[in-house]
Length: 91
Image (cartoon, rainbow, N blue to C red; front, side, top):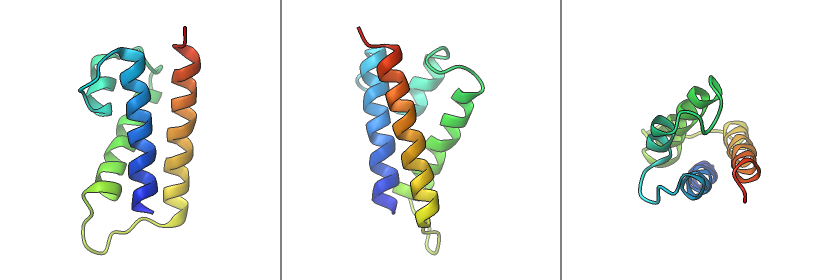
């Protein structure tokens, strides 16, 4: 489950990097620097999802393994936002 969370947010980060032209920053930094990339308060929700992915997908604490449902919602939200950004900022 941790891999699904980590990789889905990494994919979203890649899309955010492409649409902003910022190839080095993390998703969290991109969201902070580009307040209009996603309308508020959805930007805050994505910052929270980024934090969740960091805590549950990359920097795990013992005994805090995310369940299938948590991984599924993280993957679905990341995919939906990546698609939104791709469509909004294409061409």
